[in-house]
Amino acid sequence: MASDPVEAGAPDAQTLDAGAPDAQTPDAGAPEPDASDAPAFTYEIQVRWGDSDRLGHVNNTRFVEYMQEARAHFLLTELRTVGSRAGAMVVRRMEVDFLRPLTDDSGPVKVDVTVLAVGTSSYTIRHVVTDRHGVVCGMGDAVLVAFDVKKERSRPLSNAERAGLERYLVPVGVG
Image (cartoon, rainbow, N blue to C red):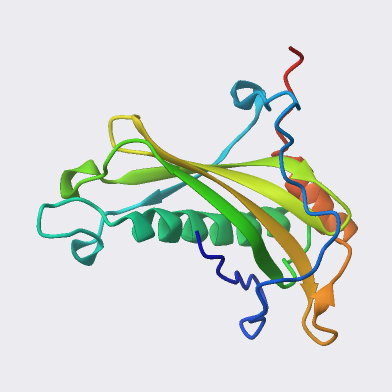
């Protein structure tokens, strides 16, 4: 899946590779995070007429767009609650599993956003897309990197950014 820049607070950050050495990606041998214990930020999105094909199925690219829209609202809303605003962020990596089709009648769609890991300058967000019946239709993990627009490189997360993210951090399951 191609990465796309996310600009929460810096619309001109157009770099895709921030070169962050600490980008958090789950290890194959590491325990899976236990999402049942995590608070989730939930964002509701209507399925729009142009989101689907002639058969009434929502295009796969729209899943990623729904995730991006939910993530942007998560960052703006949650960082505001801790007295900050998101600096520039870029998507370093994104992986999406398409589990069930969404259709024109699936909406409103809900995207639950949780945080899987927080590093020095990067963090991993999980997005779970469900239809109006609560059926999970897609899931995606994105590694985002805090970005310094002037220096065009990664930067450490601020204390406020870290506090906002850690409120939604999923505990790692034991076993």
